[in-house]
Length: 385
Image 1 (cartoon, one colour):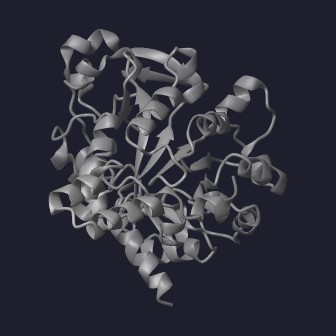
Image 2 (cartoon, one colour; image 1 turned 30 degrees about the vertical axis):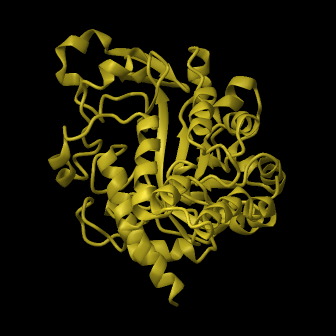
C-alpha cells in the first residue's frame, strides 16, 4: 500500500460525518457523546496528521520516570509527545505486557521476592546469553505482584524516587488508558508498538503477532487510519502483522553490520547495510510505511564519537516513500555525540538541543526521545528557523 493511501480520508472522515449528523438531527448531548465514544476513545488518525518532526516518547518519558509504566506514558503525553511507545513481551499464559525486554531483572523488584528465587535462570535470546528472570516464566497474576523500578539508576538516580510506584502494565490496560486519555483530551492518543524477539517467542509457542492483532481489532486500532504504528527489528514480524491488520508499520534497523534475528534463523544473508540500500528500502516499502533506524545510520560518528557527514539514507528512504523515525535522543552526556557533551559528568545534561538540531537538519520525519520535552523544544526551535 502506498503512502498516499495512508493519507487519504477514510473511516476517520466518515466517523466525523456521523458525529456531525447526530448534531444536525438535534440528538441530546449524551447521545452525541455516546456516538463519539464508538471507535474506542479517539483511536483513529492518519500518518499524514502527525506533525513533522514527530516526537516519540521513548518507552514513555523514560528520562524522568521508570520506563514502560503508566506514569511514564502519562508524563510523555502531558509533555506533548506526539506518540507514546510500548514494547511488548508475553507472559507464560499468553498475555502481552509492556517491557523493553523479557528479562525483567533490572526493571522490576523481582530479585526481592524470595518466592521467585527459583525462577532465576540463564537463557540464549537472539544469540545472547542472559541470566535473570524472564516474563515467559511468569503468569500475569504473578507478574502483577512485582513493582517497576528505574532500569539505569546510575544514570538517572532521581528516577528511583518512583521505584515501586507502578506495576507492569498489560498492553490491553494501555489501550484502555489511551481510550480514556483520548476522550479527556478530545484527540487521538497515538501509540507506537514494538514486537520484541518475535522469532524467539514463536518458538516457545508464544507468538506475539496474533494476540496483538486480536487486541488491535478489539479496540478498533487495526485499520490503516488507526492512531497506532507497529514496529519490529524483525522484518518478518512486520510482514506477518501486515497480513493480519492494516495498521501502519515501521521496520526498525540497528547497526549496519547486524542482521535481523529472523534473517539469522532463516539463513537470509542480508545485513542492515543491505537493507538501507535502495533495493532493500524498496523491499521494505512493499510491506511497511517507514523505517526506524539508529541515529548512527543517519549521521555516523567517528572514532572519537563526534558526528561526521550525514549518509544518503534520508534521501534514499524518502525516494521510496518511507518515513524515518530514528532512535534515540537522550539528554545525558554519556548518550550524546561527543561534540555535544558539556563538562565531565557523564550523567549531566549536554547540548541536547544542538544534537537534535543536527539530526533534524537531515530531513528525518521524527525522533524517539527519552526526554520528550527537550525534543519538542528542539523541534520548535528548528521549525522557527
